[in-house]
Length: 210
Image (cartoon, rainbow, N blue to C red; front, side, top):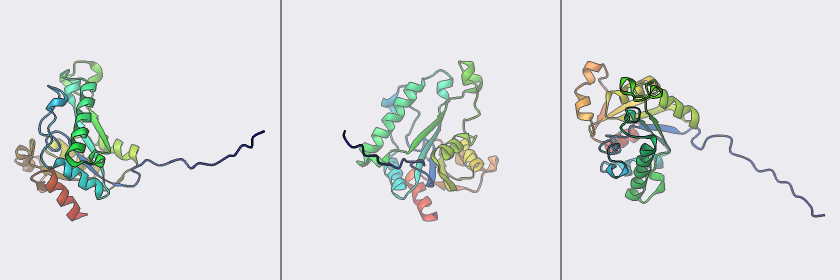
């Protein structure tokens, strides 16, 4: 009979991103210019420099996680399938812009709760939507990320509030709704926080502060 050889193969017991520092990014207004749910993936356009900035974070050792509210699903304007197609298109554009597959985010988390605008009862719940920190907490737990020294880049108050609730340092960018949000910081009790013109400037700030 043939001799049977047994070999022990060590399996990965920790997530790929275990222990990595993390930068959370909002999507619309930070990575791309406008929401894409009305016309689908073809409406996805990257903000200039966003792809290179994301790649720079990855090359610096950060896990990059996209955290986005997509309540348009719950409100009946689009479907989870379209949202997934938009994210696939975003990742494709990030790779095309840099020539690097590493320019893609490590993960994308999105919430679809629409509250009183929900077209189905199951989509009323907004407990995971920003400003709740739940999506950030889920990402940290599922991926084994290091929560110490975390950052969150966004263009709306809800992004900044989610960051603070999680314990991340928020950065407001002036792209998207950022200029309007900048004028609301004082009344919201969120001043002073770091304000940058765009994602590339935010990444430079993060790397200077690390």
